[in-house]
Length: 305
Image 1 (tube, rainbow, N blue to C red):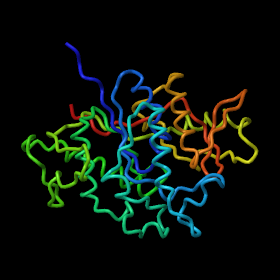
Image 2: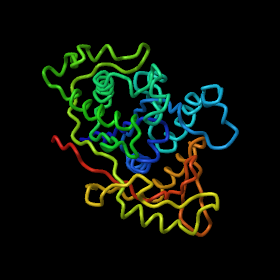
Image 3: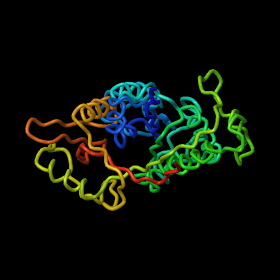
Image 4: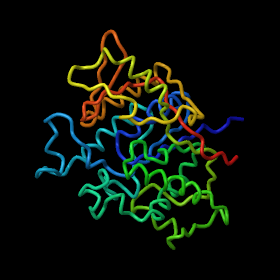
């Protein structure tokens, strides 16, 4: 008698988030035989591009507004490196748009994820949860890591989606969400996604990054970063209280190298620095150095059974 493989679903707002926050964990468990998958809510159209080669893909300053399409390519390569399958987009690719940071013009775009009805978003996510039947769902923390409104919404809707997917009134019937719409209405035409019986996800984890581990990582890279990069304090980066972490995934070398390859795949968004005599670091378009840690941390927020 064989047991079914462990299934893990990570819900993320933009391409590259899956790698930055959960890439090592996804790779680690995939290499151990688990089925891991990523649901991405937007195409990351508002990302700031590093370098000149693809700078005109962004909408700002008369650009082509084609960055989102290119980031599908980056996400595809990153997920392949992590062993996390093909890209899956909430509502289909392009349904929701990257909202940008709060107070920016991107907030008002008609397709901005920030403007979408939260219950409808949760119902769409619930369809995916019922299809994948994950044993663990990974979501951002309540603050959306660094406060991005799309991260905050993905957290809230992801937690709500787990509740909707677990509705056991009749596990073989469609579920009518509080928006008054059946879950089946959220299946995009031509998709392989289908309504499935109710699924009670056993565990849900929020992404953490303890200040202690982050500080140690910053100390380690201090003398090994490019001159153009700035070494920040922990307060300038996403970090959480040390005691908030309830689970730590220690990345072995294969998982770490997979995360490194996946981060390199997101070349418009991140630059990776691998010195000969020091630890790996990376920076986004702001040139603020960050350590690529050998750990990923989480806080258990649901343990249903």
